[in-house]
Structures are given as structure tokens and as C-alpha cells.
Image (cartoon, rainbow, N blue to C red; front, top):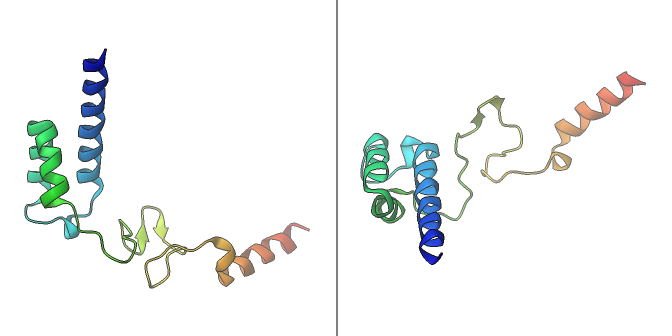
Length: 107
């Protein structure tokens, strides 16, 4: 039973590292190109995952990393100000004005 749990934990770690490599933008990956990191994590499994975490993953900085910059997958990200820290919709005056207009139009 412990070997099954260990195997599942290693599989989860490998999947986490693989997903992390795939979703990390090319511009912030360290030391090697993204495709090479994917191959290392896929073929070296758990050791490749450790290498990715130590040598390839972007170093943490003081600010939040926005994976796709100001342009999100579905258009402009309105919830990310210049500082890179997401804010809630209730902090965005433009969103509140738009919401108020929609509510008035529905009445």
C-alpha cells in the first residue's frame, strides 16, 4: 500500500511539473528553451521535474507574475493594473460605471 501512495505522489509531482513547464511563458524560462524543458520533464520524469524546479522555473520576485501579460486569452485583462497585481471588480471604477449603465438599461 505505501508503494501505491508513493507512486501516486510521484505521478502527481511529474504532472504538476509538466503542466508548469507548458504553461510558463517562453520569455521567463531560465537556462534552456521551453521545448527542451518539456522533453527533459517528460523523459526524465521525477528527476526532470526536480531539474525544472531548480534550474528552469522563473525565480519568484516581489510582484505577482501574470502568465500572459496584459493580454489574456480572451482579450484585454481589465483586472490587472500596471503594477501587475490583480484587483477585484469592485475596485475598478470603469467596471462599476459599466455595471450601473447595464442595470439602468435593464429597468
